[in-house]
Length: 175
Image (tube, rainbow, N blue to C red; front, side):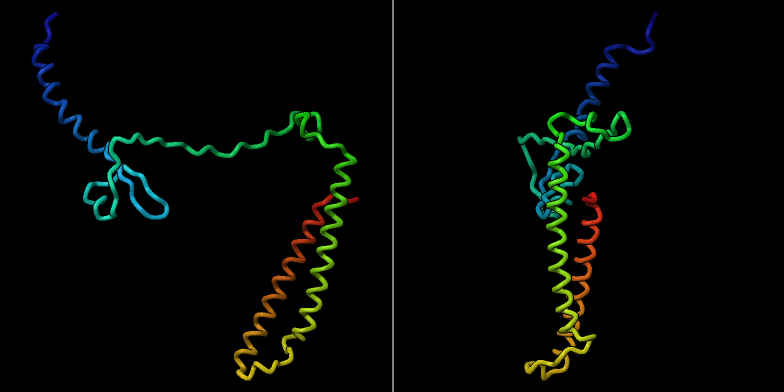
């Protein structure tokens, strides 16, 4: 079988094309470190863009890219009811100890709820339905209005805190 081309001609053509093929790879291997939060390491910039952004070239230093892994998801229990048999032995908690923890958490949350409700009642009393007493340092009416707005915002935050505490208490098992 006779080839339509000479093997030596093919080798010469490949040898001539090698520098042209290697040139884009060399340009693409130029890695830049660009300043700023966050610091950016990239090979996607042209030399002009790198100069404009104040990037420096990284030469002779190997670059390692570490891919972030998504967090592991909890596997559903084989029995489907989440029984203690599907958990590892070291994560088992004695039911009486768990009840004690839950009751302690409930007690702490109820105490905190009571304190927050008392603070809210005092704040609402001072607020007086949007018409609190003017203080001596509030000759300027705008200062008074600013204080009233701050009081209203604080009451709103306190109500949100109380709602959050109630939601947390509702999540706990009944004792």
